[in-house]
Image 1: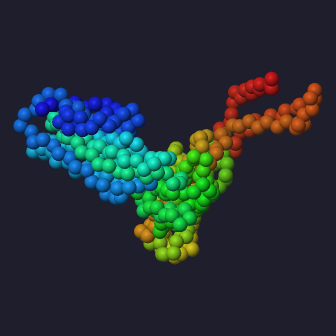
Image 2: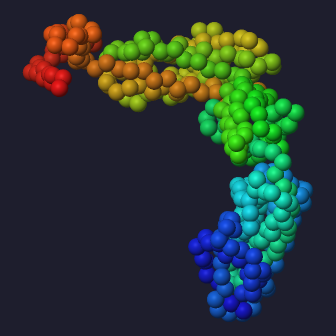
Image 3: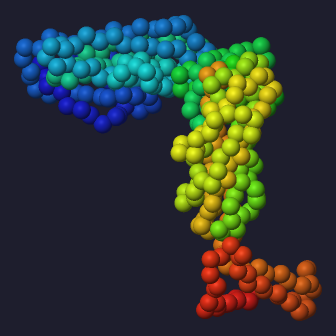
Length: 384
């Protein structure tokens, strides 16, 4: 028997107790996970075993997928902990993040196959104690009969959304835990993809497949509980107060309860006031408001005023949550003109070749400046 050491990821065949499982892997093999090789003896350890389970069809079209899980038995009383290394001759893998140590993967069959192909999938297990074992199964990848569309769906915060129904023509698919989806068997044509899940608004996406090109179509969902922010003034002066008018709208079909608006103020700004204009309780300490329940189509407005002494751009983040709907967020950026500023105008515009161009330059000190500006120097660089 042999002790094992960790190897870098490589195109390598799995091993059973240092004996090659099969000489199948080559430079085109696709592998994922933690690979190990055996080296020296480790006595008194129960040898590991591993078995594979196909959770779906044994024959799939190009671009379609099937989940494959590995069940390992290791000597846990001696501290054994399984790690898995997967290889396939063709196609590719996606990790199931909910499964520990690469113990479950999604296998996606290759597209463009000219004939049905038996793809051998091998898993190797290292037990953390000095031994490896392996198992294999075969998935038949069917000859290509069409194109595929894939994509990812995320919420307003960029997080994946599981369980979204994606429809293209009469074909549908559900997003997995990572927000991914795929639909196969599409003929060369133009299509429209739609997505749906309670609590979200997705819109639709037009795309085309053909000329040996599949499609990637992603959606960023909006919550039906919508938050919008208007900044006044749109461009602020340094030292000037900024008013954010925040509107929360229930675009859903059910009453929104437990509605809370939370605001993250721009860096180096301070709160002047916060008020729920349509009823509700606001806290200046947490910069948040607990709002009244919103019936379908109803709105609630919050007025928030901040002071600002910096010349940097202001970035405000308003977030709304409720018991009944997904959260929504609105990021608002406001340009700030510093206390002292320069403006330039020119005449004529356009100027003729050989003509004379006149520049008028203004240097302004804002009314919000706390003191006079001294030592002002204006430097101009003429056009080349």
